[in-house]
Amino acid sequence: MTSSDLIHKKFHDILLKKITHNKDPIVASNCVKILQKVVDNILSNPDVPKYRSLPSENARLRRDVCEVDGGLDFLFALGFKKKVVSFKESFTLENDRMDTNKLKIAQSLLNEFHQKAEARRETADRMMQKEKIEAKAYEERVKREVEEDWDNRRRRSILANQRREHREQKKKEEEEDKLQEEHERPEMEGLVPMEGYN
Image 1 (cartoon, rainbow, N blue to C red):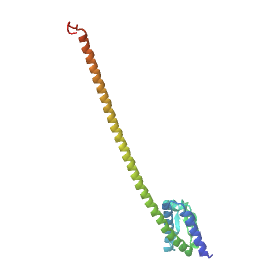
Image 2: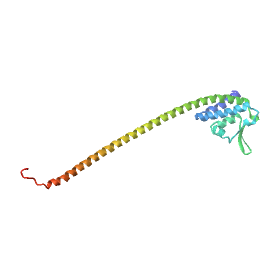
Image 3: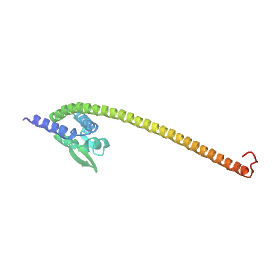
Image 4: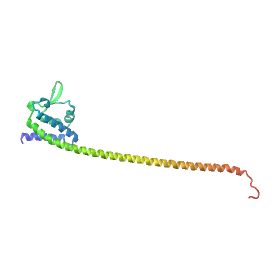
């Protein structure tokens, strides 16, 4: 195996087994994208030191590369070293460690993996959209069922109230009739039947 093959295998393994393996497609895509930008900038501007020094306090670098399994491994495989200057930590690729062949191999693999990562990301986005649509449809169905249930409960409650009121009205009428009968009876009890009418 040639040194180029070994370099290729090392980068490939980091990308495949760490950065993109079982990761959220968005996390993997962001990491590959940042690494790709770093390598592209160095290859496009090999004599400009600012492209070979990455401040570790950079939030995007920290989130999208340093905190992703394999992100730092890839930087170190490129030849970057951790360096502290004036109490500020950075990842630096010194001139003596810069290998254009290694950077081109990394660039090629990053381009390939970026396309794959973007395809996974698009698939994940479509699935998330589908899940959102399904969740919204489910939510609307449940809301509709709850509203129908409340409507049914209101109707049943109204009917129960009407029946209760009807029973109470009927009972009241019966009591009034009974009172009326009791009220009329004493008047009749005091009457003496006339002879000949019996």
